[in-house]
Length: 489
Ligand SMILES: *Cc1c(COP(=O)(O)O)cnc(C)c1O
Image (spheres, rainbow, N blue to C red):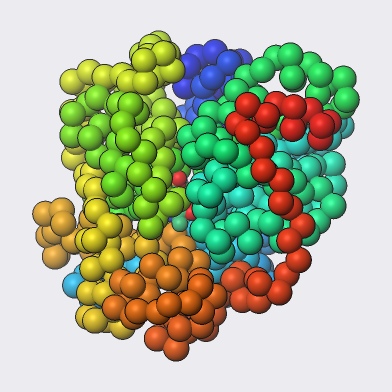
C-alpha cells in the first residue's frame, strides 16, 4: 500500500514514509492509494487487538506480521487502558449506544491512536534509514497535547514540542500537560487561539529555511496531529469493534446498517468512520456533530466552507475549531480523488478564508453525512436528560453528539453509536452543571462531587493532578514559535 497526496504534489510514499513525513511540506495530506476491502464479518467475537491487526495490516505495507503485532500488543495493554478491550460499547436506551473511547492514560479518545503511533514511528525510522532526531511538533486545543506527550515521552531518538492556546484550555488540561515528566518533552502556551497554534505549526513545517537549519543539527520534524495518517488509521479499528459488539450482543445481525454520531473538530475521528465504511463496514450514515463553531454544519448544508466567522469558546473546547484539517481528505474522496480541485479549494481557503465545492461533491456527501450543531444550553440539558433516563454520565463533547443524534430524523429501528471522546472527569465542572448540581469550588472539588454522583471511579488521568509538580510554564507569542523551535534544535 502506497500513500498519495490530496494535492498531487508528492511522490507516492510507503506507510513508513507517510508516517515520518506527517504531511506534504508544500501542503497536502497523505491518503492510501486504494481503500482496502476487508470482510469484517469474520472478526465477530474477536478481541480488540485481533481486530486491530486485521484492520491495520492492509494499510501497513512494508511492515511484517511480527512488527504489526508488536505495535498493537504494546499499545493496547491493561496498563495503558483500564478495561480489557481498550474501548467499550454501552447501551443507554432508545437504540442508542455510547462508544467509550477514553479508557487510555489521558482520559481522551486520542490515546487510542497516540499509544500506537510512536510504535509505528520506531519501526518507520529504521525502514526509512532515518538516523536523525525526530522532533514532533503538535498544536493542541487541549487533549491532543497530553495524549501525544504520554505517547512520545522518553522514546529514544524522538522529542516532542506542544503548543496550546494560552488561556484556551481547561485547568485540568493545562495541568495535565504542564506536569508531564520525561526527558524529551516541551510544552508552550501560545498567545492565540487553537487555529493560530495550528496554522503556526503548519507554517513551521512549510518553512524550508527552518527545515534546512534543523537538518544541519540532525533534526527532522514530524507531526502527531491527525494530519498524520499514522494517527488516523488506528481510529478505524474502534468503529469495527463497536459494530461487532452490537453483533455479539444480538442487537443486530452482521450486515445490518447502523449510524455513528461523532463530536467533531478536526474531522479526524469521523473520517476514520468514513474509511471504515469504505472498507466494507455496514454503516448507513455518519452524523457530524458540532458545537457553536458550526463551520462544518454550514459547509455540509451549503457547499461553502467559510472560516471567516466569529470564534466561540465553548464547554467542548476540543471542538472549538474553524479550520477542520481532515476535511481535505474527505473532499479528495468526494471529488473522485481530483487533486486539482482540492488544490484550488485549499489555495482559496489560504488566500480568502473560504471555498465552494461543486454540485457533484454535494450530491455525494448528502446521504453519507448528516451535519448538526448544538448550542451550549442544549448540550447541558442533554447531560441531565441522559442521566435522568439511564443514569449515564457523559462529558460535554459526548453531549454535543448525543444531542445531535437525537435531533436528526431518528429512525428508532436503526441503532446509533455515539462516540464518547472524553471522560466526564476531564470536564467535571460543566458536567456537574448539566447534572443540575451547583457547586462553588474549583475543578478539583467538582471531580470529587462527580464521583459521588454516579460517574464511577475517578479517572486516573485527573486523580492527584494538583499534587504533581508543574514542569512546564513557558508562555510565548504566536510570532515566537519559530525561534522557540530553533532553540530546541
Ligand atoms: C479531539 C477531540 C474531538 C474532536 O475530534 P476530531 O478528530 O478532531 O474531529 C472531540 N472530542 C474530544 C474530547 C477531543 O479530544
